Image (tube, rainbow, N blue to C red; front, side, top):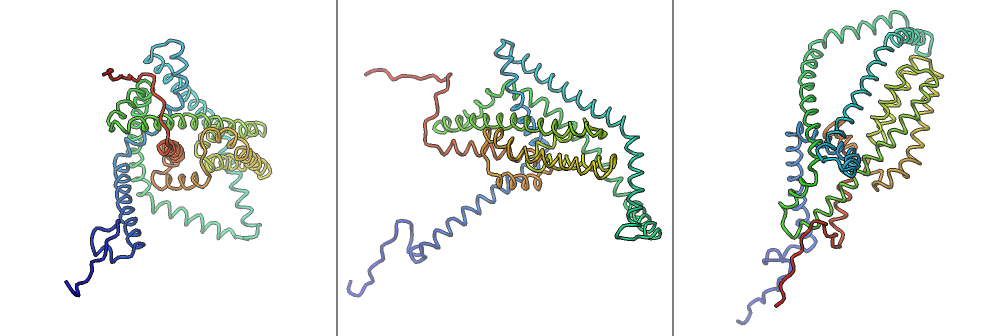
Length: 379
């Protein structure tokens, strides 16, 4: 028809004339935005779900870490021809006995050293009061008495809050006991039937995805085992290094403080430093500022050796994670789940890093030894 407008050809990325009138860059940006919104909603829903069932998720995460730590020992006993259930039970009972024995030694030494440390703490407080009077603050006795009265008044006014906190602590204690039982049972079955459980989960996936997911999962598990073993070795070296100097300078609670450093080292970068700070405070109260400065130098020196020698040499071979990713993961873990989140954040990042790299790699995974290959009949 004469005078009719020729229709504009649609672009391959458009489905209507309205889409063709929208600039290409804006269409791309909108496509990215709504997809990111959907991903964000799903991620938020997952976080809410994890928070709701955290009393189950956290023990299972701890059980996975313990399984990664104890799996090599179970493997050694299996190679010695012990039944799988017996090997798992022996390793689990031995590990539990080691933990209980260590806690018993820590508690006994703590109880034995409390009276002496309490007396020295009183002397330390008196020295601090004397310094407040004669130091740069020049506080008078009336000022000190007023501050002490205000502190006592604050404690009296918050007694009810402390009482409610004690009740919540009792509820928390029940949750901890429940979680501990769940950790023990989950660790036992992860060690005994972990391979069976993993195969069952893989079979739930589409056939085309099973090979790559199985390969990525096993590589991620190997990374977790290497990470846990490397972390234990680094933590042991930190605890021994600081503990030796605590014994040399006759600092009370040397063994409990070394155990605290060992546990703190499981939180990368900041854990051993914070636990070492507790040792410095005990040295300050017990032996004065000079010894405390020496212990502080020891803690800093051990951290430097860890950061520049142990971490690259031991941890670098286990997992290759950028320090920025570690810091961000720790911060996110603390916000989401407190101390437990800080404990499991870096292992999760390490496992996801390995799994994603394996899934993205374009290669054919190795054929499992138990795979059955069915050949077609010749025509």
